[in-house]
Image (cartoon, rainbow, N blue to C red):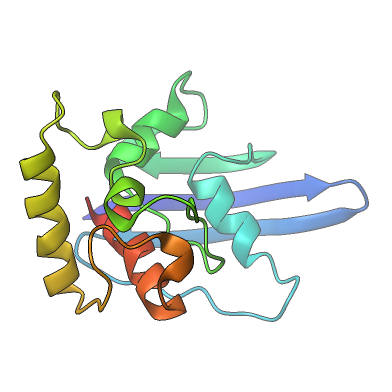
Length: 156
């Protein structure tokens, strides 16, 4: 069963058709690669699927619902799928633990528990074989650990 389906997506920018009738089907527990030259529309497709761009035509079906017309589509989408950008998007002057749980309300924890945050942070550090510690600043971490931190943020 498809958990995400895009049908005939069209996205236009002034003077350019970035997506021209694009189809995509993603099943549960499946990894998809989107490959192409610079300017092929990869980022536009992902940003459209995440609700960051409104497409001009087509359907985006997530969990059997068309999300294009939803009022709260970004919130709905972000609860079901995650996006890890190629570029590093971290708060460089905050620690690994602070970056992992930013924003706090998305963490699923309804109260501030330093011990719970630390325990979950250590879990991700071990699982992703990171060399950084929970209290290292993002700017002091290796690029590899920064990328792993972004993956950890997407997974939680």
